Image (cartoon, rainbow, N blue to C red; front, side, top):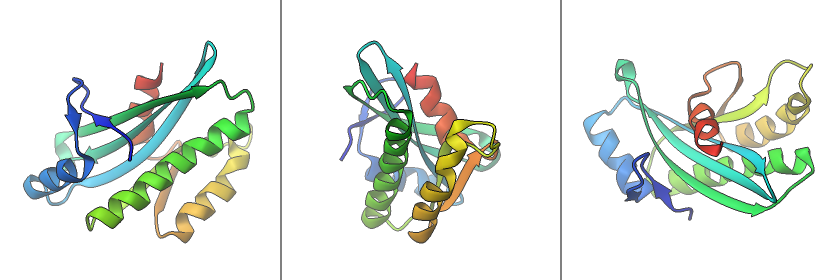
Length: 149
């Protein structure tokens, strides 16, 4: 599984961290999302588990990976969905939690990423996950975007 860290750089076990959050905030909403950026000769991915603590804001942990440059936008964006769905599947098998998946694709058909929504959202929905796309409820992907740059 991916190596996760807090925003301060401390390594954290996502299962233990999630259990700890839920023990003190049982009504926490959990969102998982990924974002990517092509920088130089590499594609950088950031995947986030975000914990919405009711009216008390959001806390999150993140994982960063980088691969050789992926020039094809569809391949790069599809990998974002794979990272998020794979993490959601792994986490929900480790601990009984309900998660939502935030996808950094635009619901407006004027954007190229719109064309990925039906396939990726259908995949995640078929596994039982609620999916959020832009402009709705982008908690995890906003954090991922911030750390991807």
